[in-house]
Length: 263
Image (tube, rainbow, N blue to C red; front, side):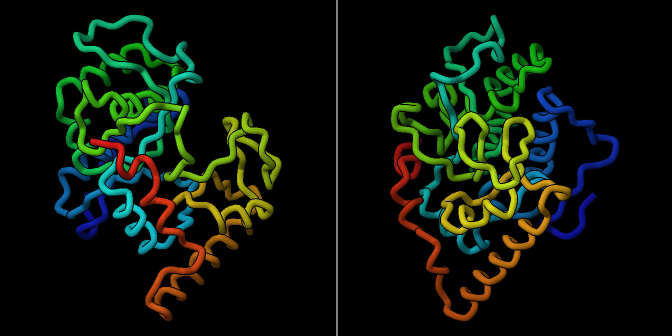
């Protein structure tokens, strides 16, 4: 069902019950990507958001940041600290690649989405994960592996750098992971991620990340309201002054390694 040129609803017969840690997390992402490719709306980047997130940047800031990133796919990945137990123990794929771990939250070019949905190797990689996906969090493997094996998956915008030894700070999401032993404003966690609260607000204002995760309606909802008001004030500043808010640092994105070290 379509409601306007830029709004697409998943048909009721294709909707899924999502269970954390299983293939059902990844399946809706690919389904939505497929619907977007079929839609009439013109778009350059796919940003997969959840209901527990909120933008830290205005629309103008997001567009400016992505332009400064120079056509890269914003997909994080780690190698040394990856959990190898999540990967298939064996497979029959006839091409060489390395498994990587990364978040399900990505910002990727339209060309990435087209490759992911239509390329034979990308489909074979997905099928391999799907075959052994039970409770192994395949959504944290698929995007990262696709984007960080440029010799095997030559996707426009794929990262060419060395992992972890020079991996910079995240761009797509502001998250506080329990393992990093950083303070959590609400002192409450879900799946090892902080449920953001009032005390986290100063971090939002200086964060280079484009979106914040995660907000839970029952946990300090006024923190969400504070962020919403701050974002509205930034939009008003842009309208009044015709330039970005002083808190926005465009050079962070243009100097980021991913902005130049990619296909």
